Length: 158
Image (cartoon, rainbow, N blue to C red; front, side, top):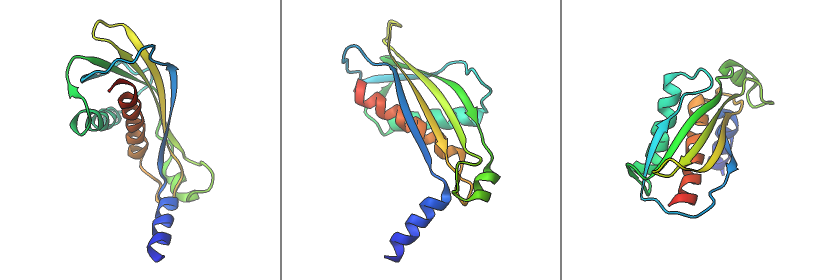
């Protein structure tokens, strides 16, 4: 019982990353791909290089390294950062889970194309880090967003 209480307390106090996906254009046909190429498009906002690296490495880990796809030409996944807000870690720490003070977030648009360049789907994912006693890390929001993109990709193109 003590372990359960401790785990719940850490989850509430740490500030957890969350993500949500909006489908802008659903795939019109179901086509399975065995390989995927992941490409970064020019962001519409200023994004630190570490954010891009964290997002892409997590996406590659889930889709290729540990996932069902090979790396290569096949399904083309192009991502563009549309919004980036580091928030205020001190505020997240100071308010310790009360409200959404200091909340950090990113928004990424994903465009899926066939090898011939024809667009077949488009989504937008938002990753957020809520307030928490330890302030939470933006990395958890970035990784959660990448994991949501990977889940959608696997569900629709594997």
